Amino acid sequence: MQATLTAASLLRPSSSEQPVARAHRETARPAEAVAGAVDSSALLQGQKAVAISHNGSVYRLQATKLGKLILTK
Picture 1: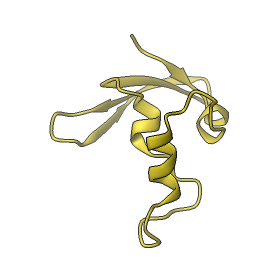
Picture 2: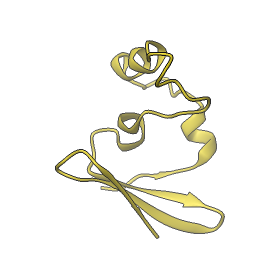
Picture 3: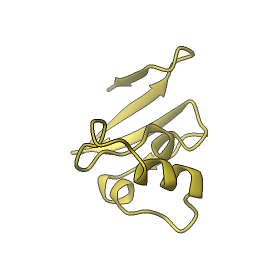
Picture 4: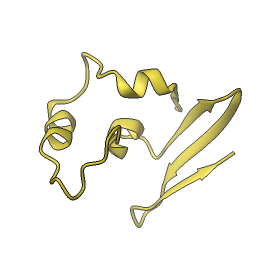
């Protein structure tokens, strides 16, 4: 099952967000902290791939077995 996400839904923490993911973002080391960064586990939510709607196009964000991310249109 794929989820479609919007930029607004990614930046707004949901009430069902797991405490582990929230804690991970809040305790990020300063060298890794980037303004507006979203942890990949928050995007994927346990799935291997998600659909992302951006400017009228749908993209697919996929995690590989080696832990890399692939974004395709």
